[in-house]
Length: 378
Image 1 (cartoon, rainbow, N blue to C red):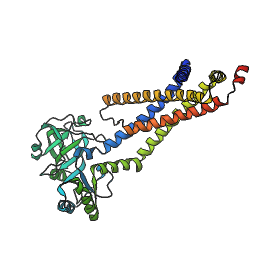
Image 2 (image 1 turned 45 degrees about the vertical axis):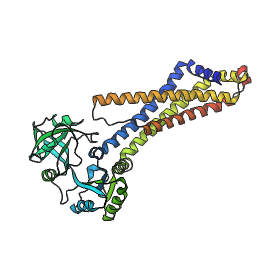
Image 3 (image 1 turned 180 degrees about the vertical axis):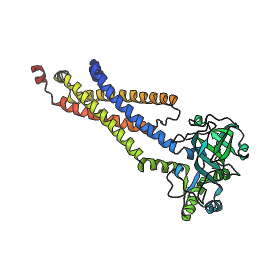
Image 4 (image 1 turned 135 degrees about the horizontal axis):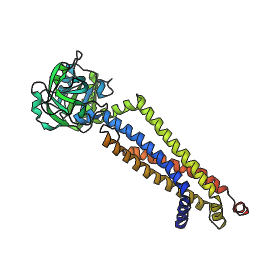
């Protein structure tokens, strides 16, 4: 069988033009599939960035909330109830809101404002510059240094701005694990200052952050909050809920799915047609092998080796090309949202295997039908 395999590979690469065309079709299909799925994964990661950045174990939310940016304010008794639940170590309010900042040059820039509990500052980011205590100073704000930082004119500590006709001052520069999805800078301040500066409804509390005493207390806390009419989700559950919202309740998921299917069909059609053409051109060689004693299963193995080798090589090249393109894109555009994940690579690999099986099948049928007498008579 080793000799059969070597012969199959030599026969495959003997016609470099056909081999290059076949390899290019598979590579291009894998490139498109990986790019589409990676961009969607990056978008989902950015969509739940606030949940990861704050880092609370349990989030109490209104059941109608699908993502952080569309929070529904809750009454204060929800916080009091959460603090009274057995197994709760502590519970703190947090505010998420949007506002317009007037910069020094007179232009306006939209920002996300996160208000932390005035006592504990639970959910605060890691500071690169400044002291966290300075957030209690008059008009104190902390700015996040991420891909959107330059939209605020790269403010330094001491820089001033206007937010809804209120004076604001940068007292710290922070970093967070993930940037936001919509390309909007983020400011942190105290809860009381946030609800004072930003107009809001009668209820102002966006979420309640809960820290359980032990992991075993989580299910009990969730049940108690559910009986109150609200939801208590772990960080992972809230992240999954946000992902499901963008996958199934927006056009984003369907668009990515359609593009992935189109990429798969492109690869399937190009590789199938090119490989079938390759087999037709080498039909006499397969007939000669059959005439000198090669069995049908050996010819089948030859074709499977050829298609599998081409598809796996195209898979590697496609993944490498997509990864390189994403790295270059992030160097030029820091807010570019894309990430390569194992599920994405696994799905792309599965689709490549399907392409290999399809290409092999249509060629195997033709090879098994040839008769050595017809080849030599021709």
